[in-house]
Image (cartoon, rainbow, N blue to C red):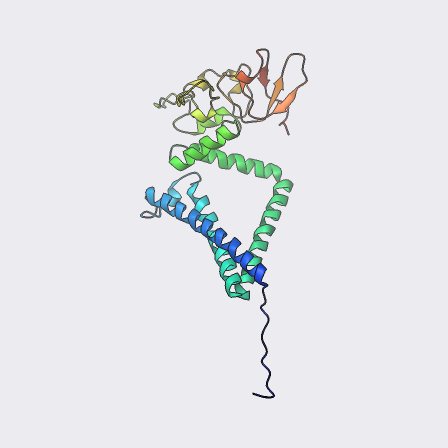
Length: 268
């Protein structure tokens, strides 16, 4: 009609930005849903979904929690970003950006607090690891996670091999009937490259061979068993060489005149 003008509202999100954000978030959404599905499937296989109380029965960390929590967060973020970009919904886009900002702020705050309270964080981390050492045989996923961590970081326990005294299967008490008594898991062993088959019994009785110098957890040991790693800070002393500090030192990798002794203070 004459005298009337039609006004077209400009889109709040540009076309390129809209479809880029949509494509990125739909991948993020699918990955999150996949992680969440894997976590729920793992819980279903372990019977957790039919017995929710089993979630609190495990003394250590259930690695499936990582899949469920990470998958849930990724799914929520991916949904908000994907639908918000496609429908140009400002509420969902604001929720997406605020949620991302909150995650970044929490990561930054965690890093700062970890630096300021590093001694307390170290103690809590050791406490957490030892709790999981106690529950090593209670959950197959936790067992696989500990074995992976010990192999990847070339360590054994939180401070040393004697941390495995906390586990009922590996402790050295006279009343322990387990064949693994005074031993360590196979992931503490240094694998021989020439072995075609993994020797899962390499850790049997190895702590019976440790000298008195390594009785307490975290202590270094002179003449350490050649297939045993140390995870705590130890001081490396070689003939005619300056002292060097390191982590996860292995006896068989060093010359015959090398001994392992605890340093006067933790190696940084």
